[in-house]
Image (cartoon, rainbow, N blue to C red; front, side):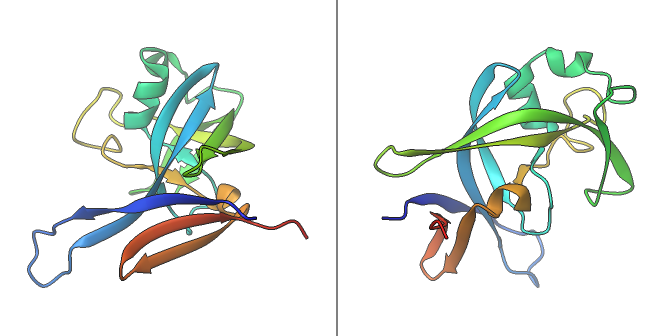
Length: 162
């Protein structure tokens, strides 16, 4: 029997009458990073090749350690493009994501994720602090993704072994 991991749509009203409200697909997964663990809401992004931990959630995971990371000189740095204008430095870090189904069965995936450099360096409503963390295709390749808008549902289904 294949397992399903359910997410939901995050709904936000737009301030522009000519545009429909925003619906963004999310799923929660437990993140283990640098021996720390937290449950993080991940926005599903089929256009991102990598899973990206943005500053708001990185601060939850790492606390003050986030401001101590040297994003410019880190040996595992990565130039992250496609998020906002220009590029942002990121650090490649080994991580574990764990999804739980409705019966509490778990699926664990080990992979490198990108920790995006906070811009500005302090918590703010500017820069990339407001961006959600992204669940990219590096994780999605382990699942079949189903999005339904009527009724709204987000489902990751475990891919059956070949």
